[in-house]
Length: 597
Image (tube, rainbow, N blue to C red; front, side, top):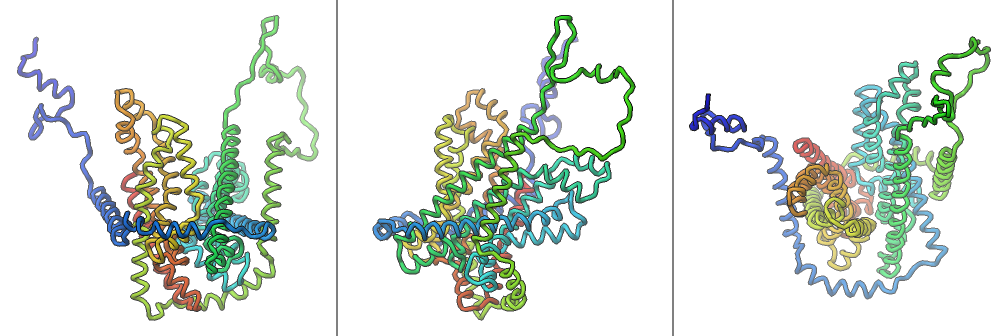
């Protein structure tokens, strides 16, 4: 029976899934986008508020072209005062460089030693109970939230001027990052090997040593190398509060207004950062190749056919020959158990050599940083009286000033993050291999991002303070330029990790590369990019506090002044205020990532 012509559109509508019934006639298209949820609307409103806050902060701080033009004369004068560069004598420069490297390496090693047990307690699959996990997570969060300069001020009161102050300060602060990443790596392991050891009767410690640590070892080494790179930049900041090395020499040169020597030392720090980035990147890539090679499945043995027609296994007897012994097999005589160990091949010898070199370097760094057991014991004895100087917290009669400067610090962080976002998005897109057509272009912009990332924010702040004058303008510009290195790299990595399938489909449909980027790449990388942007804001709040040490405005200036006049109870108040602000931003970031996941 034929279908009447008047019924065919309705049938076609039902076939294609078009809505029917009340409010859904055959001519109306079906909804393809999900309805907005209250959480999604609130998250979008929160992002709009943050973006508006960044724009308002930039306007409030007068970060505009006119400010840059007005500072052009100061910039030219600064270049004239810093050239030619004046380097210290070669022996003195080598001593300062080695002292800085020794402090950084020893501090990173201390953070690894402290972070590993904390990470095992904080990880869900290796903890001994939820109370231990809660305590470990709390310690990791506190270590990350408290600025490292505060650890340095407290350590200076205990250990005095020298390398041990830097080792303790950077080592304790690094636990916040290293412990978190270690705990995340432990939670992502394959539980199969551990279950096998547990079934064989192994205890908890044997399971961790035999099944957990071997799996996370590459991640542990890569995280330690990354933290080493960060600590090298941090050491410059801590030089202004009594930590020896290049940072302390740079602080002395700036206090004398000797910009020729100051910029020469800043150049040495920059070259060290580049060298550390190159070495750590090469080691991480070598570790990744080695892990990939070990995890690759082995190919089956090749069979070669003899002239008689029967296949013969090369290098071993066939499975059938092993299955049919020609004579009864007697049980082996009882004796000492044989120990099974890996062969001493080239890979094992190379790993042992690198391990021995790393241990020797750490030992030499401990000696070079003047870390001694007697000094540690003296510090432990003085810990109680020193903590008494910091407690209870007090505003020192300047609560209104502290609140106003905290608000200025937030403005600096918002404006700096906005500047970094505007500059990092195009740079990160041009550095992503799946966005640009030419690999050479992507490598060039990767190099630009790496060069910007190698410059410590404190050096940028010093330059902008001289060019634009004391105040928050210098801090905002320094954070904006410094954010390009971090956020640009994270944006490029997020874009490259997008699934290439949708982009290839859109490109095959005749779309241009710009259309492919905005329709298939950027929307899928948006949640990850948003997380990186909020992480950059979190980092910039702490960095804005530190830049106040060199006159870049905000509550960091109050922090340094309180430490200079020995008002450590005010230092504690400043730390609690910054800690509350950082935790609020971190909680907001966690919630937004959950909404957009």
